[in-house]
Length: 146
Image (cartoon, rainbow, N blue to C red; front, top):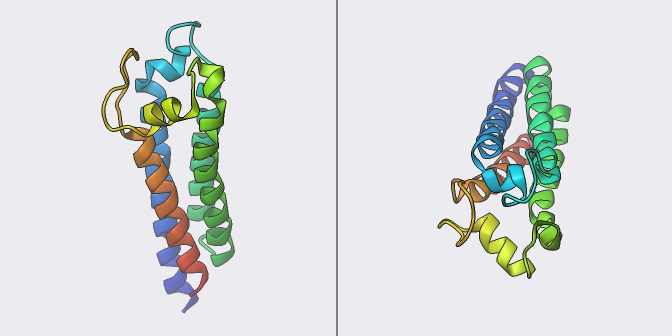
């Protein structure tokens, strides 16, 4: 029984790798994130914040692959849920990046079309990352219940 649960826990590790890949894609493609919409030289503090989430993802995946236990799955569930909350909480920093309102910044972050006046980026990646954090957390919590 424990062996089959351990094998299933690897799914959480794979999801964490997907989370990491999405984060890295955002970091390398979002020129707004890198330069605070062109007002500073690379790299802007928000870029480093997202880099930290990516580091957490890859370390979490490594831990899951090294020790695929229910306990580590539970830690991954809580961690990815907190990372999802972090992505939502980022909206509160709208004034740091020059937006006049939280709703405008939320539209930029979670919109599937390019925000008017922004530099090069791939719209929708933030949404996808948020969704994958929720999926990763849900799968990890479901494994905890087994």
